Image 1 (cartoon, rainbow, N blue to C red):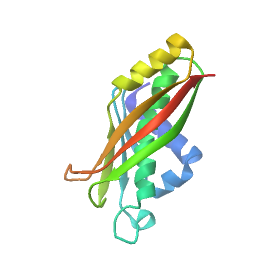
Image 2 (image 1 turned 45 degrees about the vertical axis):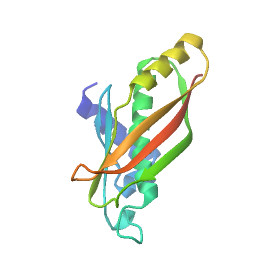
Image 3 (image 1 turned 120 degrees about the horizontal axis):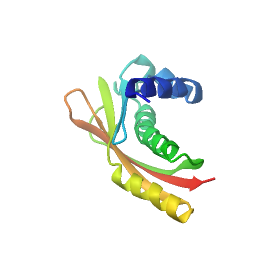
Image 4 (image 1 turned 135 degrees about the vertical axis):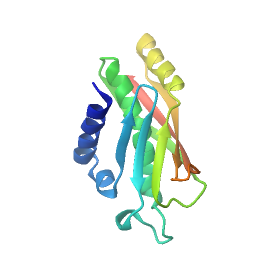
Length: 152
């Protein structure tokens, strides 16, 4: 499926299955085999009392950037795979103002984990990292999500 069509399909999925993220302004920008880019723009609805984006909104955008890659790569296997976040860690480096873009592009470990799951037919866990950047390309946040993957 063409990238633009895939982005549209996933954003529609987001609107219906994760409406709070959609309402907060979280949007998928790019989906490729090697990366996923998700953006969110500071606005009144997603602000905190410190005049920046509320951490939970940043967490939704960060998780989505890893989750879309996990879903795409597990769907590409043509197997029914159960996916679940089992833990996460977030670090905030700067105030999140303006447009924040999360880039998840460390897919090598994810690919290895999926292959191991297929080869062994056992559940695997994999840490998937993502970083959020402001409009000046300064890192404002970094996250790690531990995903559990299991063939149903």
